[in-house]
Length: 210
Picture 1 (spheres, rainbow, N blue to C red):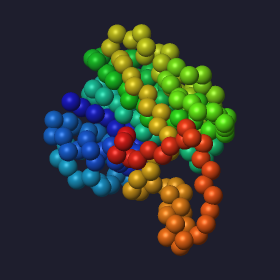
Picture 2 (picture 1 turned 60 degrees about the vertical axis):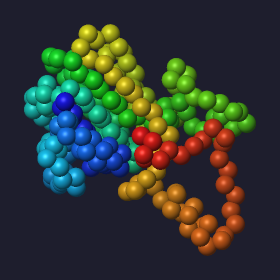
Picture 3 (picture 1 turned 90 degrees about the vertical axis):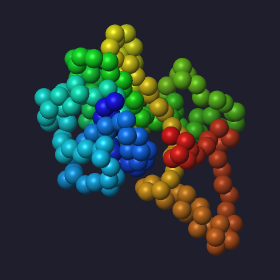
Picture 4 (picture 1 turned 120 degrees about the vertical axis):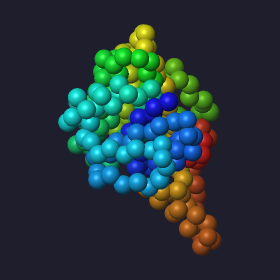
């Protein structure tokens, strides 16, 4: 089985790649805009340097050869790049999958933020379900939600393309950019007093749960 992994050198993508590379029945193609580097050294992993939004024809060929496309790319820090990265890239993936032949599946890593900020639920005990009303707040959440809805609108009735959308909460693990967990551990180690206010429905997700 051929897998195309986008964002393989990112926090979540690199962890997924490490697990997939252990399965010798899989061939994983990883695309990066940066100079190719090979953190995961395995015979079934191939790295390609490519700006997918600037080279549609080559991207189409790669998708044609893939059975599963896993998209872990997400721009969280630079608002000027969020629409292009979080929505336009996903739209391009969906359009190329529909234009391709053979069975394809898209796995999109999105965000629980599509359902709204946690302070929206203060004083409530809730369980968020897939069909709950989306209430994105902020450009990151809005572009992620827009991308997810484009996937659902265009792939739901496809005869050769299917999809899964994952909306994890805050993910932590080795290589994470956020220093929140490290800061909390430092406070505990130093024996400092602090108040930790977390809504009852808020939880962290360990990378291994992904």
